[in-house]
Image (cartoon, rainbow over all chains, first blue to last red; front, side):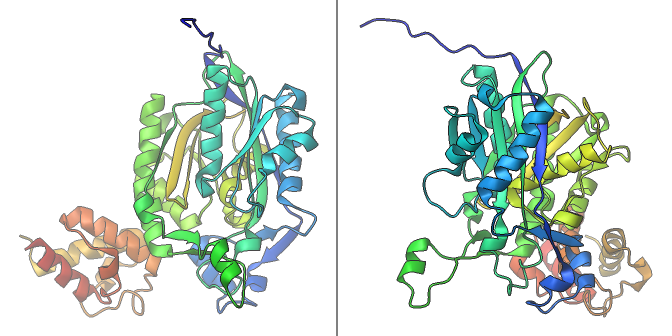
Amino acid sequence: MSVELTNSNGSQHARIMGVGAYRPGRVVTNDEVCEHIESTDEWIRARSGIIERRFAEPHETVQAMSVASARAALEHAEIDPQQLGCVVVATVSHLWQTPAVATMITEELGATPAAAFDISAACAGFCHGVALGSDMVRSGTAKYVLAIGVERLSDITDRTDRSTAFIFADGAGAAVIGPSEENGIGPVVWGSDGDKYDLIAQKESWIDVVGSDTPSMPHLRMQGNPVFRWASYEMAKVAREALDRAGITVDDLDAFIPHQANMRITDAMARALKLPEHVAVARDIAYQGNTSAASVPLAMDRMIRDGEIKSGDTALLIAFGAGLAYAAQVVKVP
Amino acid sequence: MATTEEIRSSLADIVNEVAGIPAEDVQMDKSFVDDLDVDSLSMVEVVVAAEEKFDVKIPDEEVKNLKTVGDAVAFIENAGS
């Protein structure tokens, strides 16, 4: 039959309307980390900028942390859960292959029957979620989208691995994305480099674990120096492209909120980007560690709460990690 | 083509910029790690800056062989020739 199909109609512009965070209660010091690895508080601080991090307790599940951060983001955005059209959850540490934790989060929030799914883009996941949410709002597939980044990396970190044990941590952050009179989310610059898939990865597949005589958690492993090089320099180019695509320069920025991978990466990127002194740089990693998909919204939330950035400010987000996968966009602070 | 001393001097400026080590301390016989306290992440930054400055490629697997300033200068000289 020759019939025409109608199209969905969205908003011309989208913006982040609110952010929320959940930080687990238990503080883990560098000295505690050093009970399992041969290292020192001084070495960890010099190497990563991390002073302490937080590990989730058993009741602080991926779902529970997500719901807490989502409620805070919804409140900030002044949006009811029933208004959500889609819930996107970025995580690599929800240790159920299926179903997606997004559906259970959506139900607990009271947002059913919103569309709900998980995405696997590791540390880059939140910025992927913001990009998807922005596109949904513009295309009309959802009016309001909740993007969550959540991790319990303590479950998949080898406490005895000197190259990762001090880095990874737990937490959740969320953002509500919705229609806007003015544009609040610049074009995403994203991509992948699967040639480097082995630099950060689960050390073996679940099938291999089950087939082993001595099964153990397939922890994350990471080759620090090549990752440092890629993140510090290749990602600075991606960040510059995101500024170009948004039609602004570093001088127009109020804040730089990169994935909190390592303070040394943040510093190297800031130098490579030649950020002016007035640009506030997110340094949430000092007290939060590297929380993968959760780090960007956690950092943004802290900067808002601490008064470092205010509503309407212009912030460059960039996130990068296992895959390797990356995404960057300029946003207006809610 | 830069002389050995010119390469050492430029490298010393890079080490100074990256790690805050006085440039005059960056002499041929000095070990990056043991004498100059340049850790492996700073070494990555030095390598990237040196690649740009001298228009050479220093592969990741080569970096661990560059133990002294002299090793790095020699590598840059050979790679550039």
